[in-house]
Image 1 (cartoon, rainbow, N blue to C red):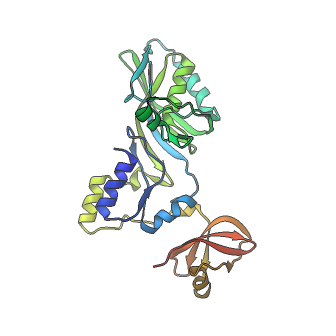
Image 2 (cartoon, rainbow, N blue to C red):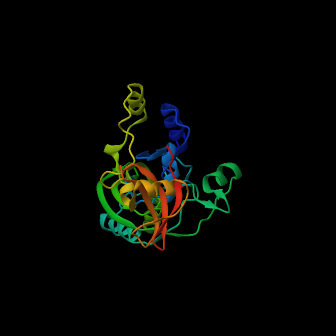
Image 3 (cartoon, rainbow, N blue to C red):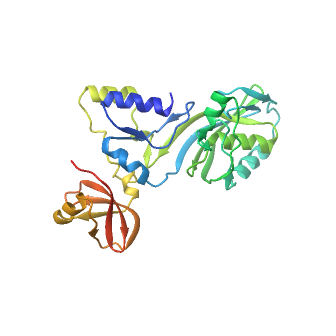
Length: 285
């Protein structure tokens, strides 16, 4: 299921008019997909980019057009007899890189065309320019030989724009045997982890039972809104802000802040300039 497909299912279960997801999850992948509903969709463009955590599988010895096991095989050299030290060295070299070329078949755009659409609709591959990325943490969890292929399971935390498929591809290139991604599970995004997530079947059961307690503004712990500064407005200030007028505040300069009423409810988003909060989004109940 694609991220857009999951979004359609969630909208149907919750009878939501508006919904949007944060961070596309590859069709072949599973895991955490934060979804905003209703007025929360207005916040998506203001949220800071999030690091992601994955548990992935590196498959050495085979190269595919999509850089994962679902794609057409381009070459299969096998990975028998590879030295463990060489493999670990190659993983370290790629993990230390500060740039990465996005996969040809991806949601990345060039001249308004997404990579996967160029291949499926036009039969061509887009060569993307390298983008700045970083691997924050990387731990190898398991290794095994599978016929002529070598499978390595790892956990990694990466910056926005990083493709695990691209990482696997590059490790194979350094070793000269080729590689692609096997299984992939996203275990963390925007402050939410696997324990915070609901499967679609569990979501359906909860909604049918009238339990909507899972809905959150993400303000607890390291959730979505906890990563954005906020200001609180009194009744008089809120009346002005709610009508689109700037109001005085103690902050002098900030790109984006959340605006809360004194009762703690979220009132909108503002830009702080010269000691005033200028409305960017206002939530009217």
